[in-house]
Length: 64
Image (cartoon, rainbow, N blue to C red; front, side, top):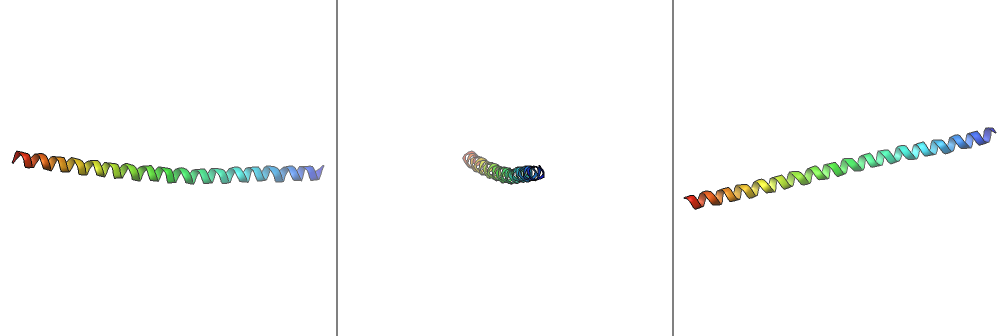
């Protein structure tokens, strides 16, 4: 009976360790995805600002 309990405890411990490792890995992955999305949005905003500035300069040249 004691050996069955010991085997059960080892099995349950393995499941818990596996679940913990999975949560850590998925947490790190979501951090990387968030950082990638943030970087992409910053680059998009910088591109839009550059385009707006270029159009504004073109319009001011046409007025002169």
